[in-house]
Image 1 (tube, one colour):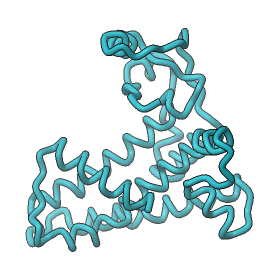
Image 2 (tube, one colour):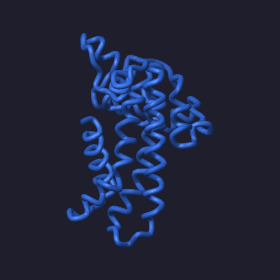
Image 3 (tube, rainbow, N blue to C red):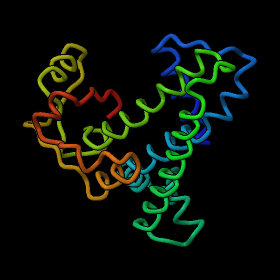
Length: 204
């Protein structure tokens, strides 16, 4: 169910944002080709949001967490660390599968231009979301908003009681990006870099 929600969200966000139209008769093909990418979208979100969602469930007195990490823990009788490792492995497998699909269909003119653009755009959407997840205040209490973000928040009546700017990549997250996309080792998450790159978190 959560993967299905991720599918709808990413499809709507990317196609609307880029003014992409995929013909209705091509939607079955789209779903088939995009399945690995949508799996990555859902599992990547669950991997990075685990601590936040677990804390919320505990605060509300819930015994379960609607998160793939929790599902893997229960289905395979493993702990959090092993479940996260399994989640990363599944993500990596689907990233490889998706990149192969994109490469194989880049010049496939039997597919509409809209579908080909969408397939290519999802590479950047997924990798960008992974980088955002590494530094955003939504998942990392030690990260705060920059000056521009604070100004926009104040203009919209959104409070921020944090001070200073600190980015602390949680253990395992950067390794996950490296394992998944092969770029984690080269990403420098310095405060200056984060000030420039960090997006506004409307949902934190």
